[in-house]
Image (tube, rainbow, N blue to C red; front, top):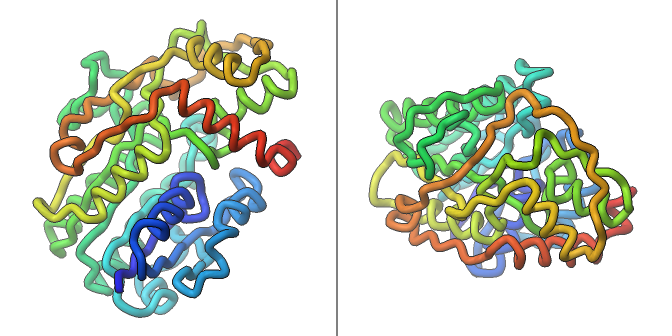
Length: 324
């Protein structure tokens, strides 16, 4: 019987991953670690994992990884573990500029403690959620994993630090470390602070949406089920012991195009509140995903129109909870 430890499992990507794993890997045991960071309401995270909490094969451990040593974690999570998926992190580029030390504690020390835990427990498979933000401002599109990295926010720097910390533990302690650079993940369960969620909510409510800059910034939006497939590929990957892999959609959408797409699925016109460009934001993200295809069998299938419709349907189904 396999046992996976998923940190940040009550969050957006984590809960979608757990749902998929329980559906497709019979007999699986999952331990979820989450600290229910108040970055967005606890009630949303509790809702995300509500369907799992009654399962005997699911265990929730509530602790702050930035403040819990590897030794303490080993006491909290007994038994054999086959793989760790470390999704837990303090999120957000712009907030990291205001409070960079809290991001170091959560994202770097938290990872350090998890790697120490893996060393103590003899866990050999470690999947780490990195970010496309590590590329910074770079016009060599699409971005390959071996690009020169120039992060421009404290959040991005913590993710780059995480990749290098994983390399250290791979070299010193034989931990297979797979860093996945996520590209703007969206879909059912998306965090309320992210653009697609905020825009959908405000357009439905006929409230203004903040458009930073002229609307020509663009992102490689990746539907959450495609990201989950990539994570699962990384959980089972065993060909090499250290890899950094992009998980994107290899397709960019401008901010204006995104707004038009949300207008189409909601049937309402956006009220635009144009604001200056924000520090820490990059003008464009665009993933080369050839490495993911070759190593993980990664094959993203959901285009933006279909993904926005799925998000909208989920939002309307749970609107009463989401618009509080």
